[in-house]
Image (cartoon, rainbow, N blue to C red; front, side, top):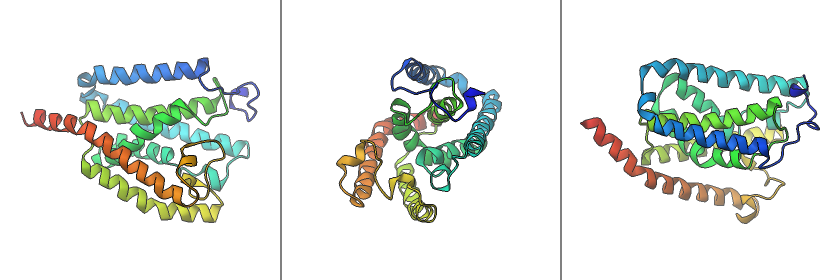
Amino acid sequence: MEWFGHSHKSFNFELFSESHLMILAIFVLISVFIFLYRKKLNDPKWRRTEIGSAFSLISIEIMNHIWMLAHGVWKTGRSLPMELCNIALLLCIILLFTRKKIFFELVFFIAILGVPQAIITPALTYDFPHFRFFHFFYAHLMVVWVTLYFTWAKGYYPTFRSFIKLMVFINLMLPVILFINKQADGNYWFLRHKPKSPSLFDVLGPYPWYIFSLESVLIVICLIAWLILRKWEKSYEERSQV
C-alpha cells in the first residue's frame, strides 16, 4: 500500500507537472460543464447526488485523519479542520445536506476567491497516485464545484448581506482560532506568524499588522466580486418573479 504510505520519494509533487495540469484541466472542464448544463442540473433527481457528494466528502476527510494517525503525523496544532479551506469544506457538506442559503453565503467568497489559489499553487508534497494527492484535490475541487452548482443551477447568488455575514463570521472565528493556536501551539490562519515560504503576507507588513492588512484585502476583493455578481443576482430575481 505504497499509495497510502508516509514516504513521498516515489510521489514527489511538482508544480505544473503532468498530473497537476491534468487536475487543472479537469477543474476547468467540469466548471464549464456545470455552467452549460445548469438548467438540467436544477432538477429534483439530483438530490441523491447532492447527498452522495456530501457523504463522499465526509468519507475522504475521515480517511485523511486515519492516514495522519496511522503515520503519527496528526498534531493538534496543525491537523484540526480549522483552516479556511477546511471550514469551507465543512460548510459545503452542510450545504449539500440542508440546501440552506446561510451556508452558501458563508462559503461562497472563500470558495470562489480563496480555494482556486490553493488548486493552482497547492502546498502539496505527494503526487499522483498517492492518497494525499487525491484527498487534497478532491476536497478543494468539490468546494468550488458545489459552490458553482448552487450558484448557477440553484440560483443561490450572494448579496451584500452575504458579504456582511462572512465578515461577521470570520471576526467571530478569530478569537476562537487565536485561543486554539495558543493552546495547541498552532498557526491556523497564520495568526501567530507568517508562512515560511514566500507569499502575499510578505507585502502586508510585519506581525501583527499583516493580519489587519489581510482582512482589508479580503474586504476589497469580496466587494469587487459582489459588484460583479450583483447583476446576475438581479437577473435571477427578475426571472423568478415572472
